[in-house]
Length: 130
Image 1 (cartoon, rainbow, N blue to C red):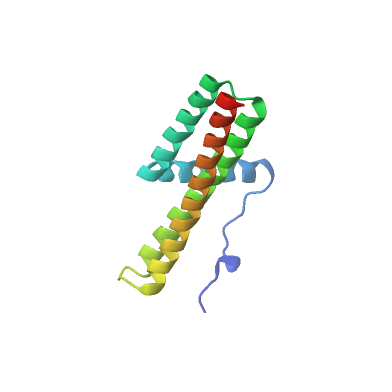
Image 2 (tube, rainbow, N blue to C red):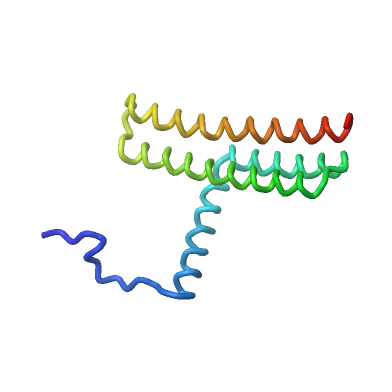
């Protein structure tokens, strides 16, 4: 009978070793995500928004909300990339289900891009005319 991952003899890290391993896995994910042009554009947009906020004199709360929105965007972009990779691995041929999965992930990213854009416009307009 084939072993399942739960039956593995591999010793699982615990305590601080587990935290270090989780951090290492996260950094490997970041390195992989950096290969995505869309993510690099989002990082540039984040830097541009920070500069724009500095120019218009945005408040600390505005920076905080921007940071939260950008982190959520980066997380959703990561999940979207994971979905794309899994679909490409499991179903390399063109399929309706695979296309739908990729389109839904893309739409999730689009929604957050809109939320970030609306927030930046709100802060800039509010700072200039408020």
